[in-house]
Image 1 (tube, rainbow, N blue to C red):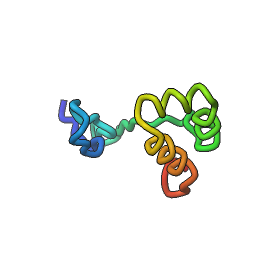
Image 2 (image 1 turned 60 degrees about the vertical axis):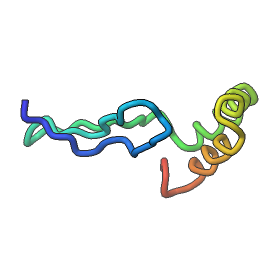
Image 3 (image 1 turned 180 degrees about the horizontal axis):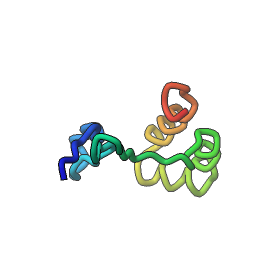
Length: 80
């Protein structure tokens, strides 16, 4: 097809999966990207702070991971 990969997911050696394609150029005029426009920082922060979601994240990934998710949502250099 002649497409080219423009961006791939960051390397995470602890995850036993292939890195995902994040952006691709299909041709000279068309680029596709992976993003989630519904994932606004305020909405996601509120969602992750509900008792059931917070509990699920902490049980599966630990409190440190949950806190880093909240911190990233409050960082204007991240999801905003």
